[in-house]
Structures are given as C-alpha cells and as structure tokens.
Length: 328
Ligand SMILES: Nc1ncnc2c1ncn2[C@@H]1O[C@H](COP(=O)(O)OP(=O)(O)OP(=O)(O)O)[C@@H](O)[C@H]1O
Image 1 (cartoon, protein in one colour):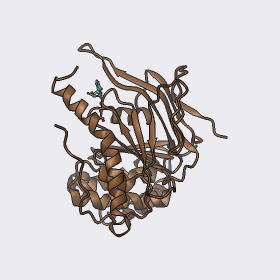
Image 2 (cartoon, helix red, strand yellow):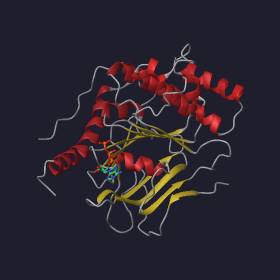
Image 3 (spheres, helix red, strand yellow):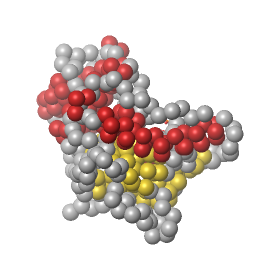
C-alpha cells in the first residue's frame, strides 16, 4: 500500500550562444506548457502536464523569466554486462531564469541522473540539453551540490570554499576575501581554519553551500543537499539557502524527496514518473515569499501538497511494485 500524503508539519519556516550539453537530432520536441495553456505537444502524446490549482491567485510564482535551461526529449540508458537500465525517457522541461525549480519523484526514477546531465557530468543518449545563458568567461555555468558535501578533507574551510576560485586563477587575497564573505553568510565565521573532520554534518554542508555560492555559477544544481541532516539543521540551512538565493537570484534546480520542502522552496515543482523517469506534472507554487509559517495560507499549502502527492503517489506505487518484483 502506498503511504498517504505527507501532513503539513509544524515547521516555523521561516548574444547568447546556446550551449548544448548533448545533442542528437530529435524532432519530438515538446513545448513546456504554460500553467494556463492547453497541453499540446503536436503529436497528441502529451507527456508534460503543468498544473495551476485554482484558488491561490493567478500570480505565476516564478515570474516566468526567459528560459534558462531546456531539456528536450532526453533519454538516458545505463549499459552494463548485467543488463541495461533505462533511467530517463523523453524528459522534456524548461526552467526559467532565476527560478527555484524543485524536482520530486520516486526513489530510483532518475532525478540524480537528470541533474548530472544538466551539469554536464553525464551525456544523454538522445535528446538535447541546452543551457540558454551566455557562458561566463570567468565563472562556471553550473555548480552541483550533493548530499555527500563533496568537500576536501585535507583542506581547511576557507581553502574548500575558495577552491573553485583558485582553480580559475583568482589571486589568493581576492579569493579569500570572497570565501570569507560566504563563510560569514552561512554562519561559519571563526571556523575558517578548521578542517572537515572538526565539523558537524550540517557545518560541512554549509561549507559546501558557501563554496557553491562563492563560485558564482549561473545555475545551481542541488541533489538533496540536506537529505542527510537532522530536521532542525535542515530547516536552518534551508533558510540560509533561501536567503542566499534571494540575494543572488540565480537559477536553482533542486532535487528532494520532501514535498513540504519543495513547496517551501520552489517556484514550481516537477513530479517525475517511476523509472524510466519523465516529467509527469509541473505544479506551480503560487505562494508569496518569504514563506514563513505566519504568511503561508494553510489551505493553499495543502492544496498544492495534495496536487503534488496525487501525481506522485501512483508513481511511488509503481516504483514499489517494481522493486518488490510484482511488476517487471
Ligand atoms: N552508474 C550507473 N550504472 C547503472 N545504473 C545506474 C547508475 N546510476 C544510476 N543507475 C540506475 O538508474 C536509475 C536512476 O538512478 P538515479 O540515481 O538517477 O535515481 P534517483 O531518482 O536520483 O534515485 P534516489 O531518489 O533513490 O536518489 C536507478 O535504477 C539506478 O539504479
């Protein structure tokens, strides 16, 4: 049996040269549907459904800037002697400039795979990933933040945060100045010379977040960055992340298993199907920011939660049935 919808918790939440990550000619392009537009992908096989739920006002939460990245009919198969695994099938999505886009889906549906494709760490077998922002000369286009921190144990906090800047040849005094600024922003001042083994999990993740922002990429790709942390630390870091995002107004694609978290963070939430993953639904989160407990209308929150869960629950069920061997 599929678990019921998660309940509303008690958190106090406070010249563009298009770059193509991977391409192959593929005519099966789906236009990402605006929340108010009818689904029409031109071939009668609608595979992306964007939802705007009535009752929450008409303001599109993301503001709908220009598209910042686009995935079109992306397929990814992992091949191995023990058998091929089709991780993604026909994934089509546009994420807007400065948008906070959250991605949810059943375990193993291909969320991390998709993020790695966006980050250029993997190549798709067919389809196309386009980064629609100009490639900065002196900064990375994307920066990934993983659950496992990804920081160097042999480097101090400041060296870790400044690492990307060092790689780009930024002089030491300048990179340390930038690193200190972000160390302060994530409340790690005083720990500049500490090493990762001297830090808690939450502090390590703060180093990782500070490093990502110090790198100043156009797009942040975050793969359950706080998934391993306790609830209080996670809540605290979510607020820090939102504050940094609010200042930088960069684009974020954020993978999570937590619907509540996605609603508190996201402008839109993409729900992925069971593997092979595709974007099944996109739900608008038309809630004002900051989304503190006092100003989130509970009814509206629950409507959005229900919309996401309704779409997700079938996929979780399919995924569980497959892993239990009840379906192929
Ligand atoms: N390097 C790999 N080689 C073979 N199969 C892989 C590889 N990486 C991932 N997979 C498979 O691809 C599918 C998608 O994996 P992925 O990690 O992208 O899913 P996910 O949605 O991020 O999962 P989770 O939510 O559990 O983290 C899974 O079935 C996984 O076993």
